[in-house]
Length: 117
Image (cartoon, rainbow, N blue to C red; front, side, top):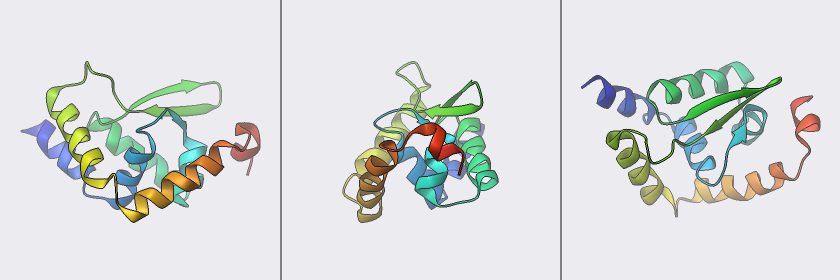
């Protein structure tokens, strides 16, 4: 029951869902997520912490940067099913499509430059 509650809590925020959808293609640095979501670094970190607690994302630190990605196929069934549902439900959502276009532009910016802003 706790896993279910953590997953539903994590999915109950638009910005967390936007972050999940941004991660569907590849791993992203927290600076890239901050730029995409347009939120304060502390707010993005809190959102990502909630997603990580629910096991909807995995994190790794490399030097100064924290990276996030969606879990692989070894994730618990509840997590895999929740992610499948989110991706399937929102693939044609206008906000998600706008984010995808914006993310393409963000990915063109050098990480050093982006993270020093």
